[in-house]
Image 1 (tube, rainbow, N blue to C red):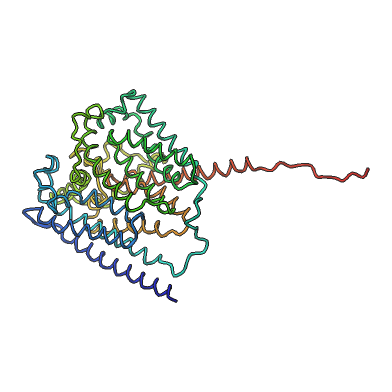
Image 2: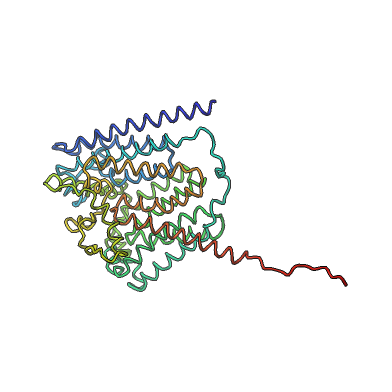
Amino acid sequence: MRELSSARHARLICIAYALVTGVLAGAAALLIPIETADPVVSFRWIAPASVAVIASMAWFGGIWTATSVYALIFWCFHFGLVVVLGTAWAGVEDLSVWELSWLLGPHAVDAAILSLAGLLAFACGSALVFARRLPSHPARGASSVSDPVVHAYGAAGSMLVFGTIGVWCLIVVSTGGPGGFFVSYEDYRAMTTPYGDVLAVIWMVLGLGLVLSVTGRPGGLRTAAAATFAAFSLVALPLGLRSEVMFRGMAALVAAARCGRGLSSKRALALGVALLAVIPIVREVRNTGLSGLSDAVLAPRFYEALAEMGGSLNPVEKVVRWHAEGEPFDGGRSYWAPIERAAARVLPGLVVSKADNDMRITSVLVTDRVGAIGFSPVAEAYRNFGGAGVVIVLGLFGAALAAIDSIRERRLAVFALAIVYVPMLMNIRNTFIFVPAHLAGGVALLAVLAASRHVLGSVVRRPYARPAYIRSEV
């Protein structure tokens, strides 16, 4: 009876939290546009408000959950600059020129408030799902956390990690020679352009394989796969491949925590400090490559790490500015574009323009008008449906990830993280265009692994028929 009462109280708390964050999300979206002469003044209340949402989600759902880690990464990429300026950690004069060009404009505060509305909506959506999924009694057949075997694809995941990193190394060597590992980011992109589609598949397979590997059976193969990914990170980060390393690594940590192997608080803190120290260095090195390391600024500058990640507020400011200048909303065209483009590959009568010329793809539009500044789910939702779209889309994202966290069978939860979580993390810094392809590719790859395991198991374990024993009458 006491357990049932506790579940009811927890459910009521979830519902109350969802109502509060939902109302605040709608109110924040309605504040757009807001007139202010000094954006830093508004940042002083937006910064603590965003921190309060993150802290409440961590307390509410736990630290190493899919929802909390997504919200934290979302916060870093959308509120890093806001916190740096709003807390007076650094002044505007301490930031680089590209940050100053838009940060003090008339729409920077609108972009920050829209991002806050999206964060609140994400918290609301996740709380609603948690309230519905809270159990009043333990689920039957739930896996024991002490059981080290979650699924039978750990070895296959490790082999995918080895294979994808090996193919990536071959591409780099074949296009740039051994020195290709030490060039700048722009040079890396230029030399690997012919292998763009292959690299897209590599990154998709690497994320899925890494999640399967770290959640598989303990042993030397899993340790070797983790060491291989760590070695790859040491090479890829100076090249500027931060997203390829960060998002897949964080997805693997969340999946490992789901299986009872999460990092301790001290290790998590040390990892966070290390990332804040490395990110500014990587930013300097990626402009020249390791060959120009002596010219890079290597002193730790933690505020620059947050400022660097907080650049995802820039595309939000751009779409708000374009709408204020008279451009209409897209009405969902950027979300429909990847589905239509995928259908055009299999349907003979459907013809679409080349990806580089399709302005429905928001990354193409932003690159054409501004340059390669990345993108944001907040910017894409606003570009399509306005402030209401930000609340709805981010609320659905929160509900989707909370549904993954609520899966009680760990094997199914790991598969969902492997297929869904990596592309959703990547969407924080990119557009939606690649998400459907990643989801379909992940499902197809997992189906191939399952079919292969079934076929191999049938061949290896097939019993051979023996003639029946007949008792001799002699």
